[in-house]
Image: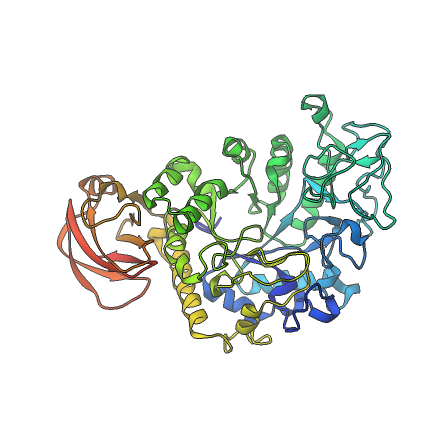
Length: 548
């Protein structure tokens, strides 16, 4: 396993879409759509050059679209990538030749591996589209729901939960869609009449938990859904992918993961599982079940967002890593953007991609845990387009056909040379490239110990606006200091004696400090217990000083 994965999340539908029409609620023919083949060798090389080790291809598995499914229960014309219609197929929109779509995906996997990157795709185990039906399942495979008894509200033999005697309805015209008896909606909505804010386009999968019976778990014998979903994981692992990001893992019983992860890893030893989990109370059980990494959304993400946009004190970052302990922290995935969250540069967050630099330095270098960025983040994409189903919400749409101008300027119609980018975008990308390459290659960041020194600071250091820590491995010491202030600060950083003892550092009255992130002239510093190092920090910037 790579010591510190650097994950680049990529949404193929708009990543390499060069159509600049951008019509509100436009069709695929009007606005275009990126394809597997458009993610070419030049694109992959650029992602490697950025510092990534893994690519998460989001929205690969076939899902509901308005072209193939009832628009009344499809979100947007392009549909939600989390309303799966066939676990054994890929999205036809992403293929140049629809009849060869799986082969085109397999070519992308090979191309990605040849570039030196590992491949992650989504696994969506909690729910499927209301119109799920596999047309591409292997011979002899029984479809989800195929042998269900819809007259039973619950049975571990069923793949879905039912509401016998009730018809599915909504506060809108369902355009001929019929569902009787109604199935339970994906967000654990046990009603035949879900609201428009529910996951109305999806139905909940049944893993043997009798929710309406007090949450009773009927896991012996193994529920039918467990076997089918394990086989789906093995199918995709057999396609050569290297791991999955498990959507809404905490809504699926941990016992299923404990059972299935061990079986997948028995055959594919290096296969990784990344869990979307928002309940810290479940972290240890899901890690014990075999997950390699879990989202640190309600911890580090939420707190860094608070520091950047809500005036929270930077010294509170300490509590976010401390709550996990030395061992669990290695398994927490840090990020500042993904498809669910608002863009850093949006009007709902920072308003400028440059202002994310100190938080991104913390996320990428504080610990050994992996870090992820979302395509466009490294260019300062704002996510403020009015695309269609997705309004002006600070996110790049996952429901519409769209071309993202920031990415198009960088991609330059497949050259991926950034020729059309303005200087501001070039500066942001250069920052991410320097930072992520350091995170991928520097031994102290990859494997070294961390010592948070923010607690030890005194006059000349604003703990509400600055944060500092050390990373150390034998032969290398890094001092990382960031500034969340909107003005340049002249910061005085005290390196406490405790840090020297804990890390086994050797003090030097004449040490040389080199900024690995920005370069520039070397400076001579006094690096001894309780010494103070003076560092000028620009607004919303940080430094990574290598101490020799």
